[in-house]
Length: 334
DNA sequence: ACATAGCCCGTGGGGACATG
DNA sequence: CATGTCCCCACGGGCTATGT
Image (cartoon, chains in turn green, blue, orange):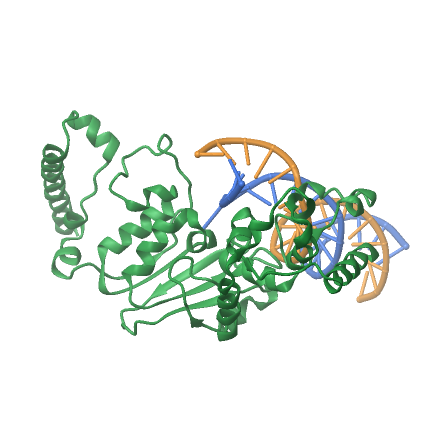
């Protein structure tokens, strides 16, 4: 045992010397700032030295399973230099970890990360998406972690995505829909997964069936953006944090009259005369909710989705007026 | 304008304990 | 043993406030 300890100490000393040598070389080759300062700001870590057999002889780790830290940072708040990372723009530690994992893995690696849903869906993490989606020929994503009706793990009220990639190169990429579940369903949750082939590798949309892709393709086939009808003629209000469905109101009277202190969650949009009824019905529809869930972080309904959603040319006919009126009346009943 | 390993609160089940 | 009370905490549901 004593000899083992001795050998370990000797090994650590040699590794320390090697790291020191590598630090000196890296410092001399890359910067003119004082060595000690550079050490403090860059905190270099030599994967090649620490895991020589794995990185050098075998080209990287065979398996990487990650639950990386979800911590946002700013240029000021991060105590070391991360300039080398393309995902620096995404401003979250999990993105940096994901990028580093692509460097220390190889084509035969299996990788799996659990990360915030936003990391796989929204534009703010597009560098991260570009890197992990493109690095691999094949992968699948399980979208989950909704807070409502319950959480993936107790105490973790976060929407998450589980990204898994195995070495078999089928060239196929799969996603699930956004899966909601009750606590009691946890034991059987993974049996409920239904994967479908992904059709867009930036913001891998959460669609579970072929028909979902057809619906989205049809929406994108129209030229006109919904937001192109946002004129100061009329206005409607939409709920900016949908949970089970999207909500829109002609006015907020119904809320304030019933002392519902949620009027603050509604945002006003200006809409053209011609599209007021159409937009009111659309923003209350399962279609719009389905579309928003597919592309969003499943939390905030923002302007972006009004620009993404394409609409046909419609006339504000009596049929639309009638349906809008009925819908409005039904809401008052509740 | 947008995103937040959030923030807050009511509810209900069940365990610990006291009383009948 | 049966019943009642209190309390804790997991759970579900809703949106505030803050920094970038």
